[in-house]
Amino acid sequence: MANQKNVLGLFDFSKKAAVAPPRWIPATASSCLITDWNKSSALKSSQPIYDAFIGEPGAWSRLLEDFKFDPDMQLDIQKFVAALDDRTILMSHLTKDGSGKNDQPVLGIKIKRDSRFVMDSIKRAVGSDSKIQIVGFEGIEATWNSNVEDVDTKVFQLPDEKDENEIGENETKPEKRFFVTANGFLLVSNNKEQIRLLLKKGEKGTLVEADDYIQLHAALGKLTDSRKIGIRSFGRMDLCLKPSYELIRRGEFEWLPWLDRREELEDGKPKPKRVARFDGSSLPKNFEKVVAPYLGLFGWVLENELDGWVITGCVLKK
Image (cartoon, rainbow, N blue to C red; front, side, top):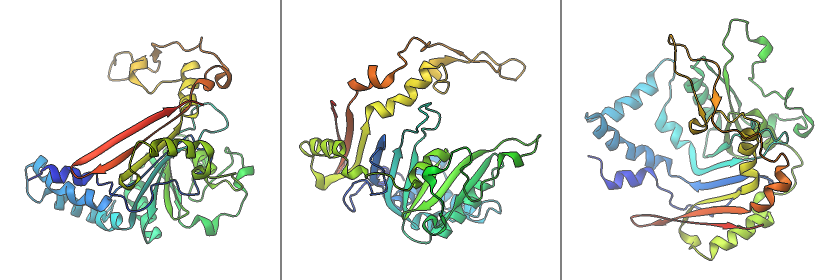
């Protein structure tokens, strides 16, 4: 039977090492969240919870077996999780075009061993979906030869990526998922520009040495016990809000339901036009001069306690 211990086991952020950004996170990152999430504990704790939810003892074990022996998937979840380290990172980086369309985050998971197995498992598990194109390869340090900084995003192409010109006229254009192993991490993003920025050569500085990161780190250090910290989050409010601001200003912020309205379905088909409730056309165009000066730093940390967690955050002015 599931209990409080099982639930806590899903979210085991016990500190294994200093919770700080790795050196490959650029100094210009918009935001970064770093944690040690015990994935093996989460997998083990899922069993009694899932069994109790389904109402059948052994249901979780049967589910894992189904994933493992499914001809299309062949995913050994236990072996896959064992190949991953606890260190997990979620970061974002503002792209130069400022449109907001390319500013999806990047998930980074440290690989403990056998990166080729990790990549092959992902291709089998996710690649069976015809609507998703898996773009990824293992060992980028050994295979990357070009100067990414000088490559235009439109022509920048990763190995395994199918050229859009190769897609037939009647074929559905698949969504792309980018998986790259670099710097000992598995990097995952829905956007190629974010991967390009992380692979860029000659990036000046690293986030952990940035003055504003050090400033926020020191401020939170006065309020918390660094020995207990299991999650650390840092963000530059102006860079984090700019993509959404620009999308709202141009009337393109379509993916939040409370900002727009879909007309009712007719004959089972959605009407193509969506009417926005919020008109952002009157917002100032010069975000950097009019809005950004009022937006400073923000961050929070999670401290581990015996029976739960304590979350402490702060906001600093520029």
